[in-house]
Length: 227
Image (cartoon, rainbow, N blue to C red; front, side, top):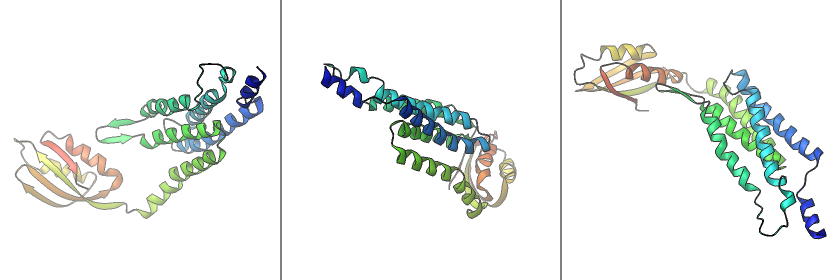
């Protein structure tokens, strides 16, 4: 009995340790959530804090919540079981912030930040402070400084080629050109039967909108960007 008690003591965590791990997880989650809040995303500061704290708590439960059963016969102990379910469960939450409108998909970055925050919470809950802090730093840099760098270094406009397959009874390509010109400048057009290849110069952020405008036309059967 004494030996079993000693084994169980190894898998216990006091009030101080529990508070420290949950507090660190919540604070690190808030650091990433604040950036999403500043961009007015659906999942902001509170959501990221709750995901980080919840992941940390699940990790603590998995590692320390069943310590009283350790040492009993026919009782297996695997702290990673609940942690593995966090990875699966966070996918459902991330899917809830992804929206698709036509060819536009929004929310992927926020879903990825929730996924990262869950990992940070798990690391803090397990006491893996280095992983939690470094993961947070990577997340903050990827979400804000890299976004600024992309805006200033990547060209705002570039030439792209769109391939359009016209419907059999299409009257012409006039409306297709008008739809593309709403987002940029048409440079060259080449038509081969029902296939229409056009090169346009437009901003990267407007490619999806231009493709959506073209695809919605009745005379268009299929449309896609080549690059």
